[in-house]
Image (cartoon, rainbow over all chains, first blue to last red):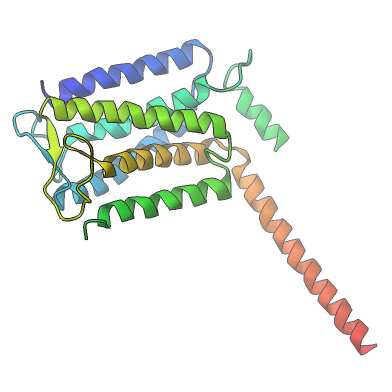
Length: 113
Length: 133
């Protein structure tokens, strides 16, 4: 099994979580997720390259696609993508039950602040 | 040197906790939810790791920067702290971006401390005036 195929399985679980969050009117703030994604991808590119360069982890050449950012396999970035989607979705799914749409709830927080 | 990677992770995690506490981003926003999200995230990524190792996709490097303590074949104890850091960082950034009151409370506390020091200065002046009288 290749690294991409393994990632596909776990990213599918992440996608299911996102669908569940949207379906239950507990969608996370997608704009915040987009910005978080940018930050996490840059940090992953930097630190994954350091971690691989100093020899903390190795990869089987047969299992990876051969696409790299520096010395980091592109597949490694799936972890960051999964984190920035799955964790905020779980966070909102665990939030208080509300009949209001998630776009309205933060607005009321604004008013209180 | 075998403690170096673990030490770097612990220092980074400490930074996450400090920021979380200062700006109420994750655990200081909702401790119950944060505990569940963090635990679920770390377990999820550990299972991902175990499949990656089990399928022979990646493996622990031979390096002097790690303790050599393993929680499973080819999974160093450092990986637990790395995944914790990944999850904590993600939720701190998301928390900072979604906490609409963050800027308001920060400026409020800044002005509060400013007025507090102004008050202190006023009291000092009053005291020194009093001592002169």
